[in-house]
Image 1: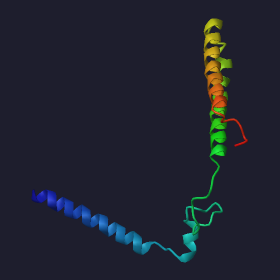
Image 2: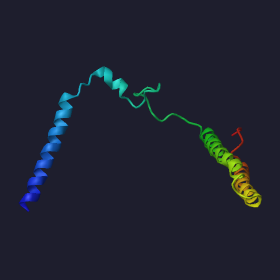
Image 3: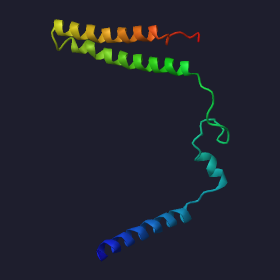
Image 4: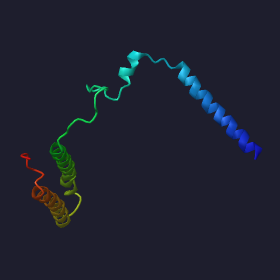
Length: 117
């Protein structure tokens, strides 16, 4: 029991000593605060971080990313044609394209592809 408290005390002291040592040795100035700001990409860190953002634009960008990834998944189908037989390749290609077409039809029926909102 005493060994547990001794180990706990030693680890707590070492951790606190390292924290105090890092705080005293770090060289932070007022000029460095701008560099470590999370808004280094042109946003004002003192302003409101919640700016109005078009949800429709966000959905269009997500749709673009989804179809971009699906196109990259379509590329290996050409190289798989040399490995597998023709029937399996046709079934796999039709199934994958059917998934793409059903997803596009669903997005079209939900009016996600219209820019006039």
